[in-house]
Length: 231
Image 1 (cartoon, rainbow, N blue to C red):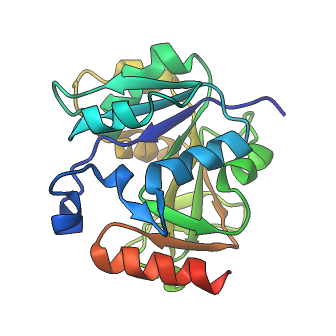
Image 2 (spheres, rainbow, N blue to C red):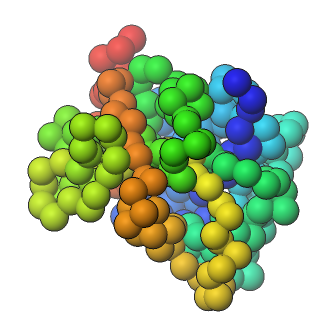
């Protein structure tokens, strides 16, 4: 199994974290003494991802300084203009290289198998353009609202319309071939997902471990409680 390149999305404003991100970017918020970004990078190292690219925008200098002593991590600098997930991934492609890439949102905490390793083992490039890690909406922590996707018997996804279904956990493998066809500088990866869903080539892998969104102070407290439960 070859290593996958990994894009870590660390450019967001983290406004739902309120005072916790007034003077620092959300990826540098600590969870039980370890920053969200370092937790994500540890997952990447354990899954042998290479290269690893981190994009930055809001208070991006702090992230650049934080990563200065971490070998093998490259910076995609979006401090001039934030590009959203699609534009950000396209801007980082010269560093990530051709072929499918992994992406990971660092604003979550995992307890269980390494999500990146699971994706790498389940990837079937002959029939997949995207493989998203998901969990049943009723079993996730730190997040409310409707589900993202529904899965058929073979794991293909369609969009959910209510709270019934699965939530995207912020980890995936994605083909990037069609990114060059996007003319806008700023766009979401939802554009690619919609095309891949329509073509029947977007799949999901259910995650059996625990996961908690760290998008708010309440989510942070729930994530720390989840980790303490696991010792």
